[in-house]
Length: 165
Image 1: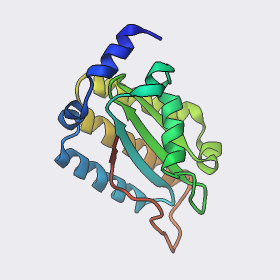
Image 2: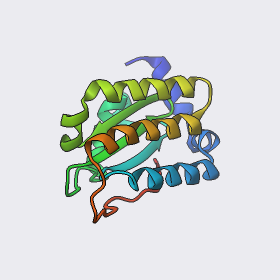
Image 3: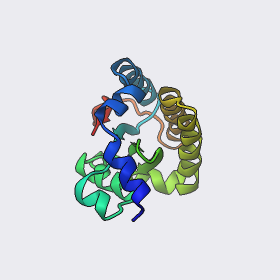
């Protein structure tokens, strides 16, 4: 456990999240998710967490480990076609993780998700948070459209509204 990481997480707060993702940006991200899901059978959730606190922080939980917890807590795995995708941002670490349900992950693979995460992290490094997320959503959309085309009875199984933790 690094003291610098603990320090970053202790000083990161909701105000920093709101600065990086103000309400209008979150609304545009929600619209991008809705537009994306109109093109495929996947279900996208976007979650931004300002910082870890308590046990996860002092256990030195990784962004990926936390993303897996959030994927489970929000029941993103609970879709008819196993087509849920979480785009998770841990703002204090400026880390992005994409967790895809088994149906999608088998078709797309971890390497593709890593490329999208890296591109988003580069944008975050330039303080382009909203643009980075929307570009990430568009990249995820390309893979979902290819591997999970929208059927005639497309149902929106998960909320499109971004989650701020």
